Amino acid sequence: MTHTCDSAWLERFPELEMLIPSTALQARVQQLGEQITRDYCMHPPLLVGVLKGSLVFLADLMRAIPLPVAYDFVAVSSYGDETYSTGQVRLIKDLDSPIRDRHVLLVEDIYDTGLTLEYLLGQLRQRQPASLRVCALLSKPARHQVPIELAYCGFEIPDRFVVGYGLDYAERYRNLPFIAVLNTV
Ligand code: 5GP
Image 1: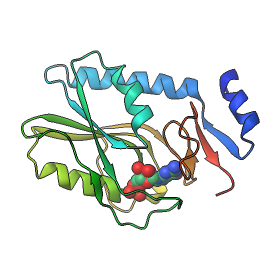
Image 2: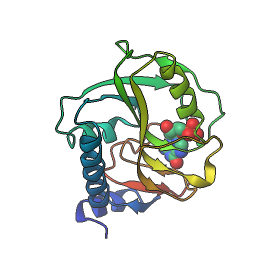
Image 3: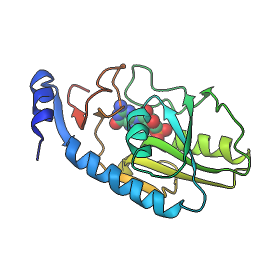
Image 4: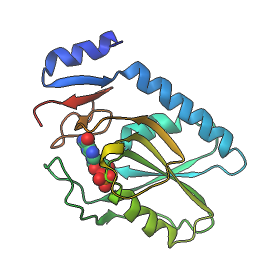
């Protein structure tokens, strides 16, 4: 069901089609937080967010993990204003601190082709963390090109271009409190 707050946004952005309402997103993020809290209670993780798309998810997720976690960010070259990846991934912002012997949980907005996650996991693994796992809010199984093991996954979604809750199109829509399909793309 679409929440009333979401309806106000949809009226202003008729190009959007609701996919995951904010209430469903929040409930799932809480569940993921509970799972992560159980799994990491003996060794609180370093949450590594991938800018910019995972920012909103990471901000909500970490507040659902009542453990002494720390967080850091990496940024990779993105789609720019395009909607589909060129397959070229490059690190444009590195972590602030070493991760050797730390328990790292990589937090990503979406597992699409998997090329970004594959590249990042390769980069981070070389630094010898104590453990390295992935939490992705969304996964598009129809688009996967490389297999990535997701320790935590919020939602599997169809092969549509989505925006909101951190995800953008040409830097727009990141501030939507829900996930929507962008119909003009
Ligand atoms: P991958 O490397 O898995 O193909 O793509 C990863 C990145 O592509 C994501 O972090 C995200 O920034 C972008 N991406 C993939 N699918 C979508 C989508 O449906 N909407 C938006 N806004 N970005 C996407």
